Image 1: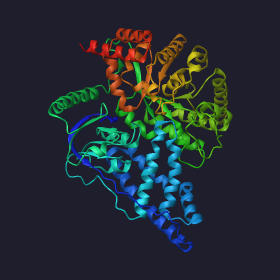
Image 2 (image 1 turned 180 degrees about the vertical axis):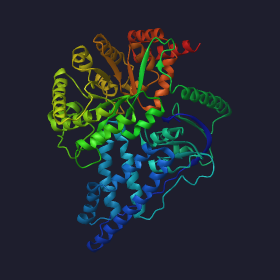
Image 3 (image 1 turned 60 degrees about the vertical axis):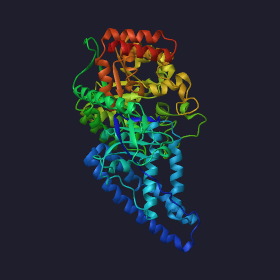
Image 4 (image 1 turned 135 degrees about the vertical axis):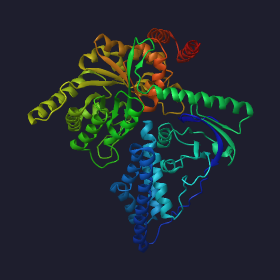
Length: 574
């Protein structure tokens, strides 16, 4: 069965099927005199849920590290969010509803909002809201929690879905792998599986109908495959694959402190990490990141009732600067709008929000937001090597306006005697085709480019990658995309400057030889992808990479390019 490769590795083991029991929620209104008791029941369930989550958080911190335990810090924050809780209490009072029904109605609205977002990471946050809601509902109805902490033998977990709570509590000594019907690569369950180094396949539709407790299963987390009761030939094939993969992992570990350079030492690039919070720095460093190529600052602005102040932002940016110990850190200014909306900002309803009032456009209209963020970044720049990057730029005037505000911020800091890095670099994300086409003009205004391929690809090919009817057309190796990437890199090099890439394509091992050959200077990706991309780069000569890139540029289709890459891989292997 085919699913999504969520966490790499190959496991052969016995299935342990997690069954779900239906929960009945009474939707009938209660009598007016029962409302007070219902509110009290809700408060007691809240206290119980907080206590449970604190225990899970402490266990996760001990076994997975503070960065992964922060997931449960976010869950606890939801249970203290007065806007969220206030809506539930108000429904109980004004509509005389049972607490569990009021909760499900409010949660449904929040879940729908997140599920409609285009950004994969944010879309998956709907699962977090549902996890917290399920815990509260079970507490309200006195239904015992299912736990994976008490497993006594090695098994492969098969489930419809696994919540972050399930994953955090599982007995790591007994859970060899897991496969679920739901989820994506950016779900917290998948993220935690990767941090625990547990092979996982998610989004395997129809899995539960086919598997029984005790069935022999193979979970191939590299290819996103699950085999049920495999024949002897398949078993032998995968036992050999397990041995080969173990050797591969050992080779990756040995690369951690080696440079990302071609095997003839003729070309060296930087491999850096994308992060969302200061807590992500530990994972970046553990995987050999030479810096941070994208710090997504919007997470500072979400799950709250008001904009974060300058001091709060300063603390977050300073923490990353200090954690990275002088390594470069690119901080992207607020990229909100489109699929990411803030309830406390008066953002208009738009016919096409992805082409609308968002990112740098919104920040230039609401200068106080950008000014506050730039002050915080500049203050933090005294503690490390920070860089600023503006998102969604389409013309030179936007850069000039943003830089004019930055110049005013610097002047203010000078008057106040506050230190900052006077050599701090400023760049832009190239994610709009127009910016890629006029890269030679835009490079005059900045110190560097970073190509945001997620948006650049869908805008170039006119494909909404979240639209299941046409998502097959979303193709990173489309010739038009590669030509735009080349144009951006060449423009920066002619000006004596550099270009990085911070979209998903940067962490794609298949695309790495082409991007290397095109002259990309910096690859920014999920931390766990760094060793794999480094291995590809160190396995090529500079001349080989350039030849592959030139052949790809001459190809007429993505399919032809993929065939080329396969041929080149086989040729190099021999």
